[in-house]
Image 1 (cartoon, rainbow, N blue to C red):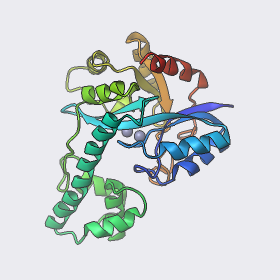
Image 2 (image 1 turned 135 degrees about the vertical axis):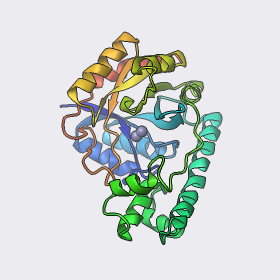
Image 3 (image 1 turned 30 degrees about the vertical axis):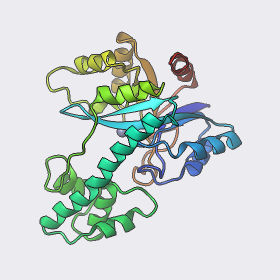
Image 4 (image 1 turned 90 degrees about the vertical axis):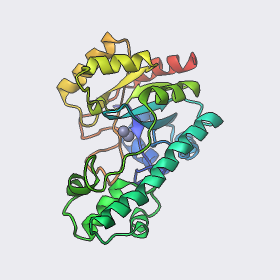
Length: 282
Ligand SMILES: [Zn+2]
Ligand SMILES: [Zn+2]
């Protein structure tokens, strides 16, 4: 049965497969339309679009922008945006530069904590992928400082731990504005990441809607049935678009498959038209 998947990562950010491989997996999974949503970068789109044409899969231009609201890191998905827009390109470039400054700082903190690791080793670990905290976790496992990636985050890499370095991120309302100024549609990714700080979940999403948010990722690999129905209700109440995707990364999230998530994800193709309608008005 046909399905769509509006949240996929490739080697252009922290995914482990290039766009062409992700498209092939999508074909096998009977995905008829998809969005490549790499973190803060759109460089995977030309390859995805040309392979999409070959395989008969519609490729929606996408991006996933990291932001911080003072309590939670929130990810804003941008769809159907003008990804060649020079202003957007410059904004994303600045965001990526802050990520690249961060990794060597994390290594410095690990070394200060007495761990024998170098940035060069992390780069080798990442191979052709862009360096991120998952690679640092892999290195700590390889060097037997920890037994699992989870332990690496719990002991060193997570917020508040010895080697945590905060990123300079835009606020969610800025990320939304960047997407809309590039004539795209802005959607809140994995809404479970919201830490409402007493404002209430509804209050947080209402504030995002007032800042221009268009939709919410209701269907997501790790959502329970009750979470999905709760977010669906929220979307209806606030008149937000409903979207969904697997957040496929490849081998770093081995339990998640393109189109199927953990097996029970189903994003219906009918969700695409409302998204395109909003995009056409931008
Ligand atoms: Zn995300
Ligand atoms: Zn993602």
